Length: 383
Image (cartoon, rainbow, N blue to C red; front, side, top):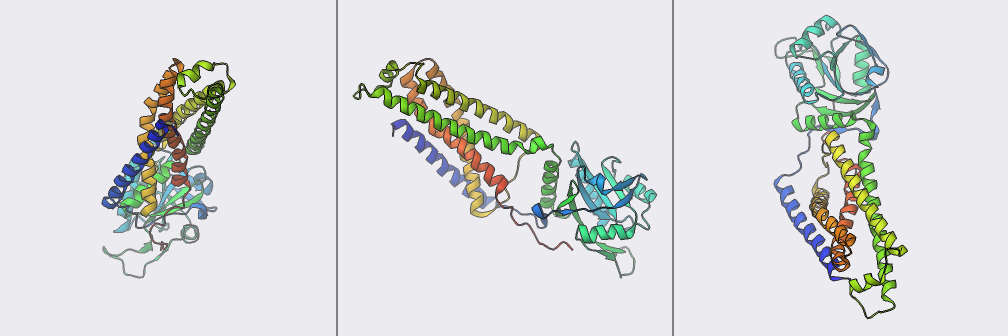
């Protein structure tokens, strides 16, 4: 192993150690705070089923209307003195936080006999509900209760307590439901700020165009391809070096070896092609990466414990070395292009292991972030 390769590997190891120490301290000082009651149903997402209700505007709303996009649902009734004004206040906040997205808000009345479209219109006005972004639904009580109990799997019933300022006529859940194209994808506690943050992030992501949601997979593929091109280019130039050294095995001077080779050597041409392709692939990755985060924002890592430390260590070391590798790659290419082969070999031996580490860890980060089992959040009871 050349001295430059050794230095590159030492830099990688040192970066990993420093990143690990920083992440251990950071995780201890700022532990993962899980939402008390938030559940991403994942593959267990339930179909909303068919229904037909009336919106406050008088228009008919069916399951087809909620199957064409992403919605956040709440359950309220307009004469409620306690929980419903708070829930609707939370929904108003979500309306503001989700401005500019395609996420719709939907409030189901659990007292449809009283909550006519006219009553709901007045109630919606109190909370500044935008007619095109926040729907209030009423209709058949049996249809609504079946939806809540059988589809959302939440509790709702008429209270036996006498009506008053400190009691509610209906007992119902204060949880919010994420409806992703007609499927109930998650349930979130409206009293928990962390759960609400998770809901907003999940809703925004679910409402993104399909091509944006596929970008992380594309980015991982580009990182993997870059790693393969780097290895192929490295193997080709190693074979060229061994072949060029055979006539004069006593010569170890890179410039002497380079003098005996030409740009027409198939191994050299293959090496150059692989490395230029790796640069193009990495550049394309960077463009796709920036585009994805511009559209989707950041994806939080939900796992805790040592898995979180490992992920953050890989992420931090990847980020630091990716930043450092850019000027190194440019310098390597410039020296090779100018024919400064001794200096090119010296910097290339340092650049190669770092660049390869960045490409491989890019794939690892994707797998850990998007394919590790989701952390279990909160209670399984939503009644």
